[in-house]
Image (tube, rainbow, N blue to C red; front, side, top):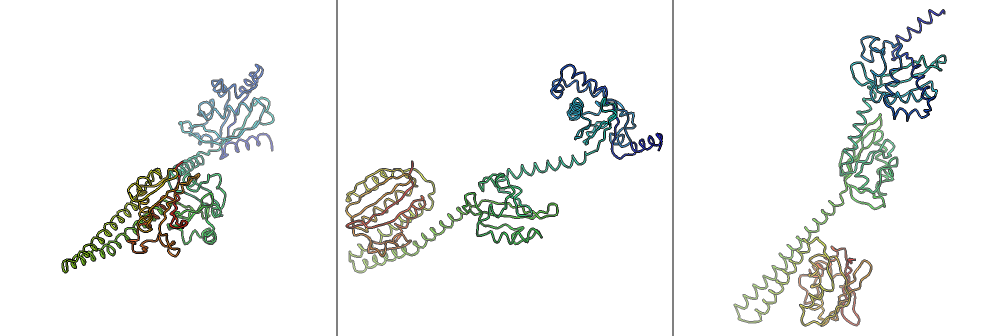
Length: 498
């Protein structure tokens, strides 16, 4: 093949290549860089950062010798002549940064460069390109012939930017959600974990990404079912819980369990099924539901007492009054009075019971002062109070104390009550000690039961039941034991205020 044939073949390959090819002359720019080195410049990156105008100077030194058809088309030019000017006409601010990188390489003797760049077309539209250039061996000393190839990656970069924008929107939306959003891949490994999930489960995203969901969130009792269900889901995208909202328990970081509401959707990504879960902590809701259920039970109890005990008392009152009208016996009035007093006490108990249902706010009380105030109402009882402590309780505390004192006076028949208050690090132990007839062993376990009555002085069976309910609502406890040589000791354990 002679020289003419080689030139024809080269020109044909150059012109018809589908890739944009430029033939450029960097020799003047190379001379300029060498002169800077002779002037003592060693850090060219810093030099151009401090002298940005010199970047434009160097760009005008680069001569564009030739471009192919693909280049004319890529840059929306009418002909080659539109492009055979200096590079500055096609530069953007991003182009200048990559051009500085090239100048630094040339200053250090490099003969090859590749990287992404943003140019602009003749009509001013931005063009994302992947740029490569190399210097032939024959011209590596003066850089007089440099071949540059450019690939238009605008579409790919646009898609990438849109994808990144979508991902950013997704992250923004999911991270502002109050519910945990968790995603697992086809192996059951966690690949997404939003901020709400960090709060709800007590684990940072970095702690769980790449770990099995089954090991991180699933309590022991659900693990086998999860594994079985996931085995089907990863092949079909279907399962018993897919597309449904269910309630179950999840596992906190410390291993404790709490109720959640779970919705799972299957999403196919790259031909594989991934699971997207929205998880809501329903602990508060469940607590509210339990409180509502408890209140409904208490209301039912009050209604039952109204229907039964109070109706019976009213019937007895009516009967004794009719008897009095018939025979004039004053004993009938005495009996009626007793039933009226029982009814009044019963109504008072129900008011206390209603108060207990509605009371939710805990306050700070000096327990010794509260006992002092109540005991002063019992003029015939001797008492002593030893110890001090502040506790958390609600407004039903006075009713609790009054019930305990009245129980000791009326049912036990004591003439003396001693209060002993023992303070520990977190608890106040309060002992209510009486010296009456005591409580038989066989009923000690029943006295706090709803409706339990004992002996002639037993009324509605609500007094101690209300006491126990109140104390437990304050996260406390109450128990009973024998006093020696006689009587009973009620022990309350209340949360101490430090």
